[in-house]
Length: 317
Image (cartoon, rainbow, N blue to C red; front, side, top):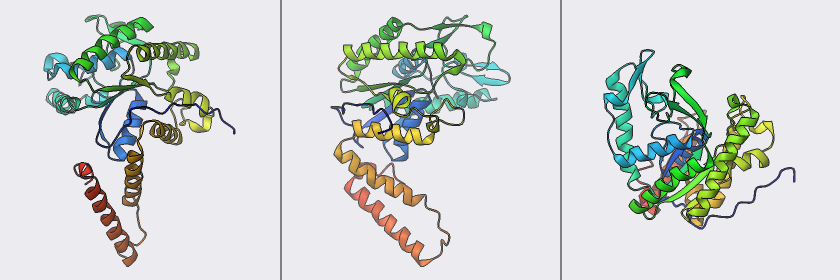
């Protein structure tokens, strides 16, 4: 054994293919959300784009609850781009109409999805926030505005716990069966410096630990610990030596699956993984009889899956 294996207690609540999952947070929330989408889970991934700090994630949840579409007053122009402090740059555009349309079309879809969400997967990236001096509000993205427009500060454990305690109580009242899976992103915020990054991650870990003790609906998945200890080698990092490599993301996804999937979910997942692999196959001779037979067999497997699991019919084209 040449690694320190993180012991994960299997979750009592198991995710099924009939559950709806919303992911919010850092790049890691995006990665895991994409892994779920790849195998046809019902998932909504980061409707505001990648979010890094707990307050911005909480603000996004509040916006979904309010269900109020964005208007021109909610966005601003900078460097010839219309942008939103609540969204990543993916929603920015040179046209004010296109910016608003991109934001609201995605927002309306997320609001509808939110009503049926069974699991919220929330990933904190950093405890550092930027407060807009004019509004006093924590922004999700500074969009390269001058630094003197913002106050940069580090959240405390109590601030995060207070914010999420209120949010969880409100959500539990509206959606009694909603469950929360929190994690801390293993991606290091190196611009803060090694020491500051570790303090930031510690604050996030302590806040989640407190929330987990307060609410039975809150669970913690140790993505951070798996990356730091189990995958303690630079071969598991992307070229920037900060982000997990594709192999690392696949491994963390495997550990997540082992903890949160029921036997039935595993069974369906394996069939879908094979179907996805077959569909991405690129033959040397697409007109050959062998490939035609391969396609026919693949289509038959797809029909069998949809016959046994009709709830997948709107996810597999």
